[in-house]
Image 1 (tube, rainbow, N blue to C red):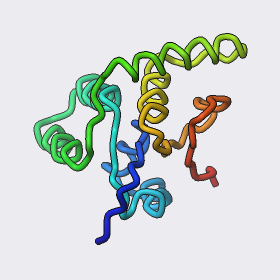
Image 2 (image 1 turned 120 degrees about the vertical axis):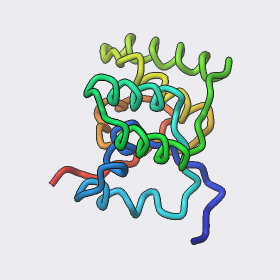
Image 3 (image 1 turned 45 degrees about the vertical axis):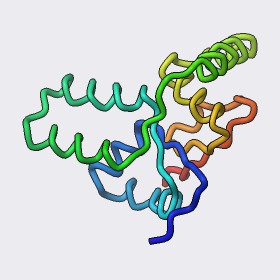
Image 4 (image 1 turned 120 degrees about the horizontal axis):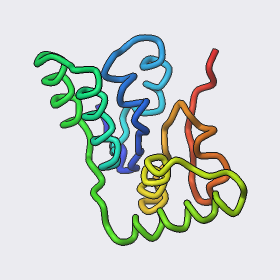
Length: 138
């Protein structure tokens, strides 16, 4: 497989779909195949929260660990924090507040000038300099 140098950032829901498999995972394969796939540090936390919240057993937790190793994890840095502050303020001014975790994920994508693949495109509408890739529900 040829891997493009272009980094693509996945929202938490896409990581979950890819981990579970099924029709939603298949719908996103064309958008992730052959790309350098990255996830935010927030997505890692959200995935671990999901495992804890649903009291996953050892087999599912091991699958999660294996899945997370397939991605470049974007850590916190000061530029991401600046982007986060700008995005939160921008959305608040526009009367469309954004959930903090979504703002962190968008800030990671904005900071790295990478497209964000999500199934929840509405959560990221109106964010300047953010390229959102989604598949229409059907």
